[in-house]
Image (cartoon, rainbow, N blue to C red; front, side, top):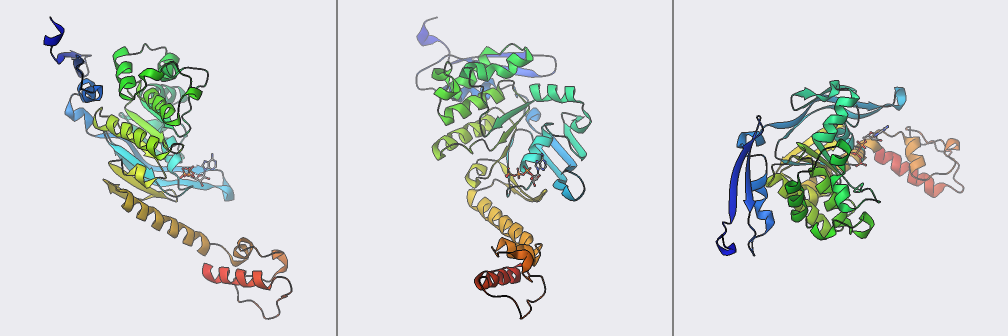
Length: 349
Ligand SMILES: Nc1ncnc2c1ncn2[C@@H]1O[C@H](COP(=O)(O)OP(=O)(O)OP(=O)(O)O)[C@@H](O)[C@H]1O
């Protein structure tokens, strides 16, 4: 057949007993981007397979420490993440976002509750089962990329398969590399790549095993706005065109606006759940939550601690309590700071 008469694409069907796969082999023509064939090559061909729940947390509790030092990182969280959706998790620092993600991924154990994934309860799995699950079914993308410096981009991408002793699916590898724009960078080591390129390598590494679920922990935290947009665009495409399920922790409302849904955490609980989030709404929700958290912290803080926070010197010697200040307060050298402390204590009430 002459090159000019080759069909644009050739179709084939295969099945592995459990699922049917539909392939398109693409005959390259100038002007047609390889990204256009993503959805055609993806394994999720049965539309019902892309629906349903990917992972679900039921009454999930995670405490760190014991006694008076105990931190309640997750206070009975109930949440499910839909298959084929991109979900962002936001919330003030220390609200429990990373704990939720690490517990869902089996990286950290739950204090109580259940995590249902693929028909199994993760909280009942032993270490070996959890390792296998993370190796084959869950992908991770980290803020700091976590690439191995002595290996090339290609070796880093293939690392999960190398560790598992599995052979790479070369067609899938080529497609990822092509679509993520890494073809010319495969022999470079991480220190020879830009931040955006390193994160794209990390995304390819997370997707190479075709995991059912990908967790991304602030994947754009170390990137400039242009590289961030590029990386978020790829994540969105992997959801829309590959049927991937992504759960991403982010502090950035613009990053969250790429997601189909955003949940807001505060003090170990979900306080908002937005479909089709936009940056403005998410910023407002976060501001309100930060303000509420600050107010709660201040209100719960005794006046003497407030005085300390306000910078009063020699606090133990000063009669600063929740009660009104007595008239005979030593004033020399600390009048200004005492006024400051009094105002802070009033504010706390
Ligand atoms: N290993 C640990 N030991 C003790 N406390 C911990 C541990 N890991 C997390 N915490 C505490 O649990 C709470 C939730 O932490 P987590 O890291 O989940 O918050 P986060 O919302 O992800 O915060 P950030 O946005 O700052 O990363 C915090 O009070 C934190 O100090």
